[in-house]
Length: 351
Image 1 (cartoon, rainbow, N blue to C red):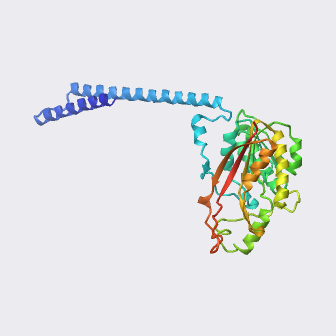
Image 2 (cartoon, helix red, strand yellow):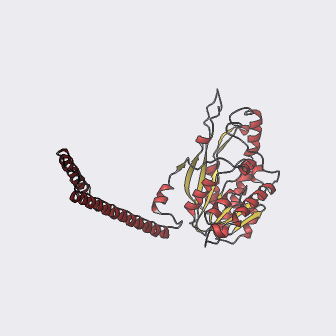
Image 3 (cartoon, helix red, strand yellow):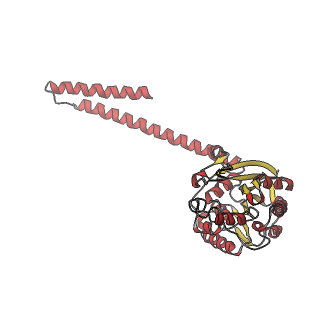
């Protein structure tokens, strides 16, 4: 193709040189014959451009057909390119600015994170469950991705916020989602009890971030005493606070009692999850210096509870949050600690 274009270019170049020579000798420049030759070459080039455009369109159609064929084969409706693109084990591109409802809760994850996980592990029309719904982020992301949503929330205030936000999205669902019929349930109460009301083997993916035992109590005390004027509070916008005084709230339980409760919830989730479904918990490890425990490996404990319930420990994804958090001086000057500016996505699967 390059050789043909070069040939056409030289033909035009020689033609122009010939006419310039004639003009210098007193000629009239382009003759009608030469003009016709130029027009012919222009038409030839236009014809080739149209042919190239047609070939590009055909190539695009073939690619679209291939992607559609791939989407039809996969359990989640992803193309091969999307599948590969989502397969990184460390994510640093899913954080976002928190809305007012997020700040009210203090420990939420971004909708962008939910959207990616939901698209990776489910397809349109599947059911997505969050047993610790909070202000509704999981259900909102599920609905927008054309999945059915079930959320359970114990806290009265969080339940009211999530219900309102979800209703606002569902109002336009008939036009927003076309032919895909989407439903949403927002259930108030303790998930340990409310999970029993769901049918068995209907959930494709559970995606949640549970309270981290009574860590919040320790964080509030630590923030008030040690980090009162530090970057931990101001630059990292630390807003985490106790969710409730309810004894059923996992955020009020010491670690041992908490793990027993998590184990019971995992067993119920296993019954409600269909074969091949996923159970994914966003977990952050922490330090319990009040009890002289430098590192609490919470994500491994959550994974073990899932395995004990019957799930397979399928994958582990790291959510890197360093770009959105300032470094805080820890243990200085006697003991060195790293900043824990990341969370884990513990991926469990029912085989």
